[in-house]
Image (cartoon, rainbow, N blue to C red; front, side):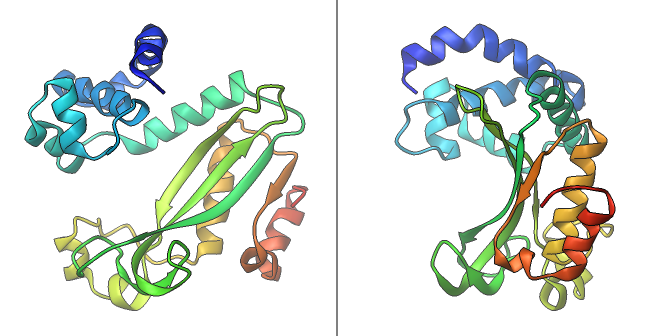
Length: 223
């Protein structure tokens, strides 16, 4: 997306982002959301904090603090997004997609990092894993988006070490759950917010788990 396109869609993007204003406690904080989103959408070769901040004329430290220290109601933002999708992009043949994403990391301080299977590297490596629920419809324009996402908290190296969790700012109520349990929770949240899925798709890791499949059978969900 080039700079001209960003300028053309800016009014619509601004209107869209204003729907989440009350998810932020402070008006100064919420203003940085537009800076970050525009940077991610724009033509910058690197989408990290410093080039995004420089392009917007914002001190990099300010944007770093927004992403790392500022508090916003993530659950409210997620629910509001899902409700918008349910209203504006409902489709009788919509498909839900469960998938994982892994990110290579160095060191041991990043939340949820450990040596585990890393899809990005295709082998065991030091990484974090996040779980996602996607949404796609067969519209002529091919609408698709992410509905939900959560970090996978490893059991022995993180859940069982609450001091380590506290150092990484992981709240006490964030506990170990299997990938299957996370996926089911994401599905139930989306349905609770009015999202309809004609089908759910996932890879064999999920498909070979009988309890996971029975949970969908119990509510009449095709998977």
